[in-house]
Length: 367
Image (tube, rainbow, N blue to C red; front, side, top):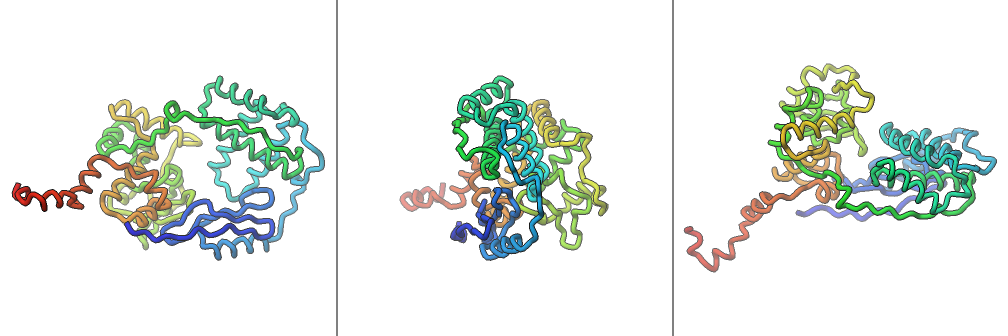
């Protein structure tokens, strides 16, 4: 497979902005950049060449800076609650972070505040961190959740130091090793038959969600966020907006028939759920449907992997498949492509790897 190679551009430091690459390149040779200000707050992200990223950074610097009196600290914090409050004010005011990301950080904040708000800043040592870890484990929290909370705690501490709210000293490190044999993420790719059997056990709205996930290879958040006016009939594309930016998915007759009564051009959501955050509901419903159907459990993201597999087996070029799913081609091939025994047998047959045996034994050609 011949794939163009792109040299990774250097980071850009322009005034108080630090612009660096997060991922990439994409099929067009662009990289995904992130610009952070002096407070390490994200002020811009996007796919761009280095020149385009530099121009974007210059435009950000040219904008008038808002005066935020609350950002100026005149005294040191005495407790970790004050440090966490400052961190949340930075997160809440970040215009680039999406609402689901902020909700994730808010959940972490609530756990950190509950156990650490009254801890003196001077008392934040290794023992305090170990105590936090022990209490969260006793409460039944997953290590992956605790790991994310500790990352946010370090971010809060760093912002506190930069704002001169706390003394300039490092937060003690606490190694948290996640045993992959105990905490196993479900990266399983379901088969078409398993998905069909699970569909029969799902309520209608969740079943439609699963069908959309399987048909588009989209992320769960992209499907939940679909609006009735996201269909561009002139171009024949459905607008999907995810963490890598909006993209147009080519609609098929099957997809149109699936959504024909819902694409009425209004701004209403395509899918309707009676809960504020339907992600958890959808995952639980799929898990229960798999149990009732007697098939191995899969997740919404497993349907994305299934779409990648179908495109790979159809011979779609990785760069094209990545553009459809909103992936980086390397990430897609490394983390989403599940190679099966059937794949291996098919490659051996197509490549005719048995030619050498036939050359030595011509009689095999007639067998």
